[in-house]
Image 1 (cartoon, rainbow, N blue to C red):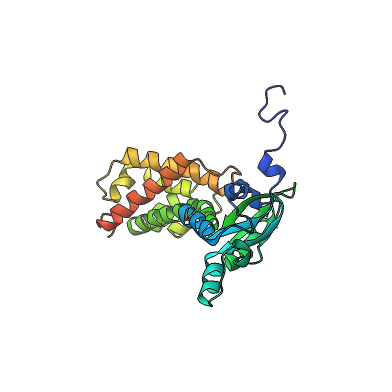
Image 2 (image 1 turned 60 degrees about the vertical axis):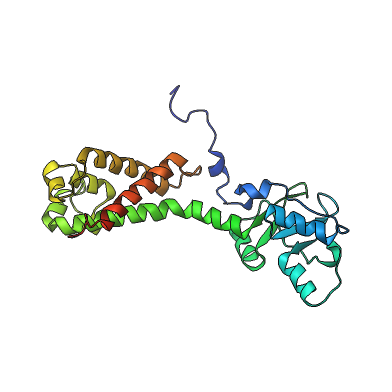
Length: 262
């Protein structure tokens, strides 16, 4: 039918290639600063200090990598009394990976060497991914799940202390009659909302915060949770991340001031 959602559209780009490739990291497409083999030690060190680099590729062209300078390669040679004055005397064999390689195939290389150079389809070095980039990426991937887990554990803790098994059972989705609810762990997030949106049940929490505002926050988190658990290829917007962070902090504050403890 004309106008039907999705008609005439191809698959989402991320679904077209579900592999999480190293090229998805912004740093893989940020051309790295490099030096030539004849660059003086002082210049190389200045570049590293002023840019807060731990590695510096030694290259003669966009495709030709001769090696890499690191603080370890500099320090080890100077500590052993080597008279090094130019980059070629300080460099070590570099590590690289293709831009279409799996993100996860780069983890071992980066864990061992603290970086990996990324080579594109045109054979040019397109970027450098460091341990810092990897840590940031894992934070971005894991943070929504960790925040949702924390929020749900806070909610479960409150509910389990205030409601009987029969009250928990009453919050169950009525279309799911065969499912047995014996504890709060048997409820879905939507059923937490069903349980607490009732004013009499809310009053059992004995928490002096506005029910309407809290239920709106609960509903916002539920919608974000659906996006996260369905692995939206675009991730979640920053405003949704802020919603999760703020609600988690709110629940933390209630626990710290002993509002949600028995």
